[in-house]
Image (cartoon, rainbow, N blue to C red; front, side, top):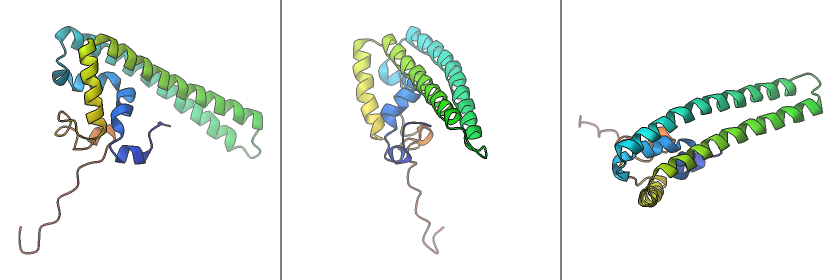
Length: 162
C-alpha cells in the first residue's frame, strides 16, 4: 500500500519518502544537526504525537477498506459494482493516509526557520543517498529502520583463524 517500492528502499531511496512517511520523527532525529530550540522540539513533539494518532486512524481505515475489497472479490460471483465501490473506498482511504502525512510534513516545516529548512533539505538529500552522518550509526548504514539497506555482513573468518 505504500508508494515506495522495495527497489527504491534497497537503493537508499528512503530519504524523501521517509520525510513524507515520518516527517516529524525525521526532524526530531536530526534535532542537533538542525540546531532546534527547546521550543521547536516541544512543538514538533506535539505535532508528532498528534500525527501518530491520526495515522493510526487512517491506517485502520485503509485496512478495513482492504478487507471489504477482499470480501467483495472472494464471493463466488463478485458483483462488479460492489467491487468498484470497495476499490474506490480503498483509494480514498490511501489518499487520506497520504494527505495526513503530507500535512504533517508541511506543518513540521513551518516550525523551522528558513535557514533550518535549507539545512533540512541538504540533510534529506544526504539521507536519501545513505550519506547522512547522523544516521549511520543508529540506523544501520543505509537506512536500517527507515527501510533502507543494512550494511553488508562481514565475511566469514578464514579457516584456522577465529
